[in-house]
Length: 289
Length: 289
Image 1 (cartoon, rainbow over the protein chains, first blue to last red):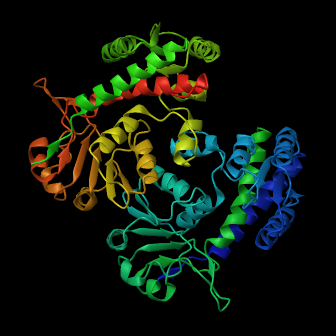
Image 2 (image 1 turned 90 degrees about the vertical axis):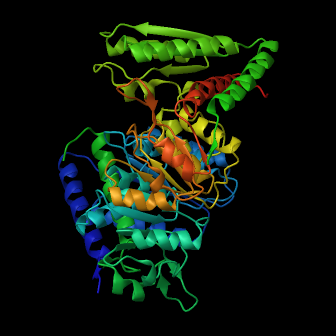
Image 3 (image 1 turned 90 degrees about the horizontal axis):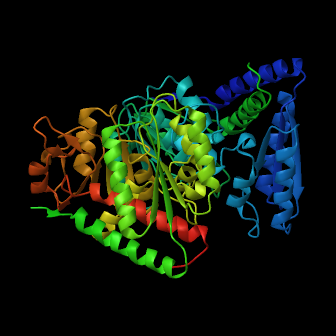
């Protein structure tokens, strides 16, 4: 039976580290500032943004939420981003996804100052990651959190074969770059990957990371014995239960370690967002911790 | 026996297209300008830059070579790049690699205006490629040329499995993004990939692209019957012959199509560089061709 990777516990550890770092910055008169822009009234986004705000406050970060009505014109959002770019009390800016149709999300991401781009979605930061540039730059928080889970689980990555399912710019693509940088050999699969090829590649994978939103896409029978399985998917079933992309029951029989859903990758995202906020504040004020 | 992919012929076709486009621009009073910066006296670089200059002249492009001595200080190169960024007669700038140790090549690449970045090495352009952004941006010319070879050979990419050997930012990484954008499933291999894993993945690959500089790394026995093989490697053997990463003799027995070395990928790079120069001029002058 697989070892269960406890995301809740590791996320708490990250939050404790963040709280300590915030305290050290406070001792020097610096309070990290995180601005979250939300457009419209999508209920899931509202909950998510409120959770971010609470978590920031708990860690001692100055969290600000800027809400725009669903019918806001793009220029107003853009002006707000430019204002936050100039605001010296703000170290980190994020635009909550999704945004209404009249707002060009990529244009907004490009407008956020790369040095305040806490989500790592500005193409300049994506490019640095993909080019494996040295130096500090923000990286998307879910993949960054997954790397922490793998590190805490002491998974060897160099020389291993890793299959990523799902190629979004939020998860799959940055993970690809992060894992390649650790000298893993990585295949990036997606909806156009034929079933047979997916099964064959999964059968060879030392680590499987599923981020598709397709419940039950990965079954125990797909896995190599001893594989490490990270399940990023989260889907609410008609009966109200949450489920991932991996069939947990059959997968845990074959895997050596596996994340549960919920309680695996999920809790890492906000914890890592706070971590990145502090890192940006440290960079911004040219401090060392 | 494999169909030989004639890179010389396809490169000539690209050059003819470029010459026609330059003519169209000339009719409107526009001459595309390409500036090549070379530092030091590496003989291979000297030859390569001279070939670029000749090819540009032949296509009607205004090619300028700016030479710095090997002991130039970084600031002088940086100032020249900034001058060229401002120069309205210059549409495309490239810094010939390698540069002497005192020059930070990545810093120089970041200094080139993204809209004149004919090599596609500025991280902003790399990020746009990796994020699969819409709109025009320059892409590294060797991978772009390989995509043209594959298109001319009418290789179906969607749903196929592609193995890339070699993860440089010049070839392997941008190719990864370009092939994923065509809905291929791609694995990116490198020096840390164990031999057995490499062989097993190659055995499943519909398309193999080798860009490692390791002669004979891919043998016929590694390939799936009917695979398409693109050999980017080019190494001069002690006897003076040029060879690729692929053992051509055994590979051509198994492959359905294969590029020779020389005469495969090689001729595409300069042809594609000229093509990108014209594209940048068209963007710069907001023309349509």
